[in-house]
Length: 308
Image (cartoon, rainbow, N blue to C red; front, side, top):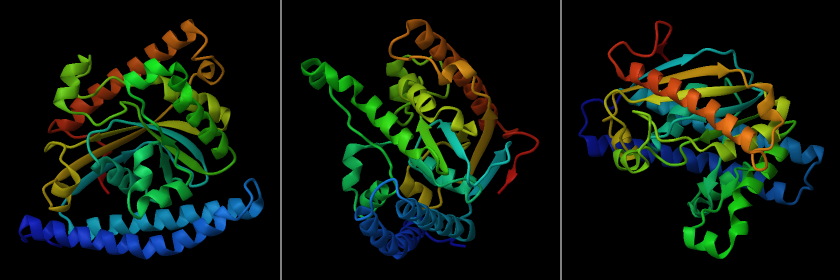
């Protein structure tokens, strides 16, 4: 454990360990990605390569988690209601406050579920080491368009929806956990004020992409997982986390039943369907807001929550 070291040294050691771990796993990952490029899609060898790439990525994340458990004095309480299947298909909705959320999701799920995929901004494909790895893992890259671009070319409004549909269609028939940060951005007090959010601890959820993901995955989904992450000492950036300044994290995972009608409706074309889906999601978000308030209190997540 690095307890007692000055924060910058603590952070530098953790950052170095994570970098070395990334370099170790990314080398074989890149080899498989090159082979994948040369392998026809939809074939058995391609599917085997996808499984091998996902295994390498999950092994990378497990090593990161091992370092945090052994060397960092952060208390992580994980409460997971459902029994998860490593070969299942899950759609995950989660609140978003900091880059640490992704690390904590790795911590919570480990190998209990498929390695998750999430939607990324197009610019992140250029991140050193990780950009190509994300591409090889079939992470969907979304282009963000300014209001000026949308005004000039209204057809761009549907581009992210098409990306969502194509990605989810590709995931059918394979173990997958698709992560959605429904707020679309990290929570800050300024964004909360600007949005006039009706929630205390959350921004407004964006329903469109979520509705299309549900529709595209269809009844192949094992379930919808509602994940709430709370930082009782306050959400901080990744560097303060590496420096040991995040002392406690609480994670709650609940399994939700998806109403049958959300698999079959037309979000774009049917106003009644769209309004009904938005009401359902707003109710879910109010429940999450109340749960988060409880998790931030002294009582914690629940009687069943325990350090993991």
